[in-house]
Length: 446
Image (cartoon, rainbow, N blue to C red; front, side, top):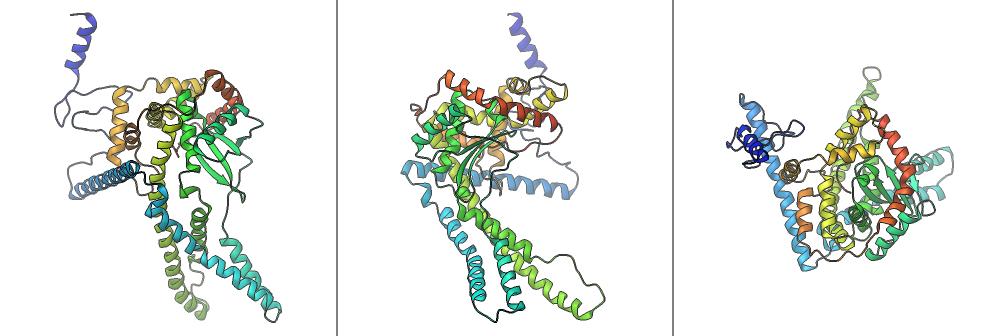
């Protein structure tokens, strides 16, 4: 027997047994120790409470039921999308999408009614001081609850086609394949994430790229990422529709306006105290009605968004390849590991944070990636998740034919893109160094 084989045998013999099934455990001080046979400790973020105490046992049972419910919800959506893909049924026939759009239209009715009332009052009436006070109040209320279209912050690192011709040429090629509109801006930031959206009254397209995520991808994975995000322009994702997004903002504004604040009259004028006592329950009830509608609209929108993510994944496979999409998702699992390595590098003053982040991800063992896959399936959908579990998205991608990528990029093109992003890398690195110790979020593709 060779020395290497003897070392492996000794390691296997010295590995501690799983306390649940007795199988040998993989032990690495840098990563979670868990059992790949029975999933013991697979999700240490959901620790088992002490066995003593009925309250603890009930809490554990409740958590387990919630985990099972989320997993079933995720599986149901996955199978529904897979069946729809086989049958060629588009996202636009999704009942959640249609219900969300109808509800959003109804939400805007009170705003239109207020605007109409304001116009009627303005052109009629005695035109005295009271008349104009009423008109001003109606106009002010309409302004408060009006649809908002967002805007590009001046603090963002935003690139235009003139500043990044190679990057925009690549996105234009992808848009041509997908039938999407060209983007106006590409914004880069410090998130391990990416997204796509519309801003402004003219609904200009904006692609956001988190440079930490971008920096760990190879060329094919970068094309897959761009394909996934730009696919949101063509797959009917209501999260980018002005109708629904403005309806959510309007509901939130109505809730803040109507919900009663702290008690104003304690003692003093009994008439005012009595009036407030009568008004508060009425206002609270009306505010809670708006809140209930807001939550219902969010639930419908999130279900539609989860389905849209699968469809964007399918289009990304068409643009890049099945393999590139799957490896992209595997790297998306590693956001927390990336931030751990990057913070450690920033604390010791590493000169190149980007290389440090990539280097740390290269040390992630295969059994840790397997654990992350199982955790994603186990947790399933959160109620407020806009994305399906990444493990199910990988499974969905695996069901597609490998195919030939519709968009190919060569090394010289990607090198030109990296040169255009170099100023963004420097600015974002400075932001990340100043943010050492603050938590980062956004470990899912949008």
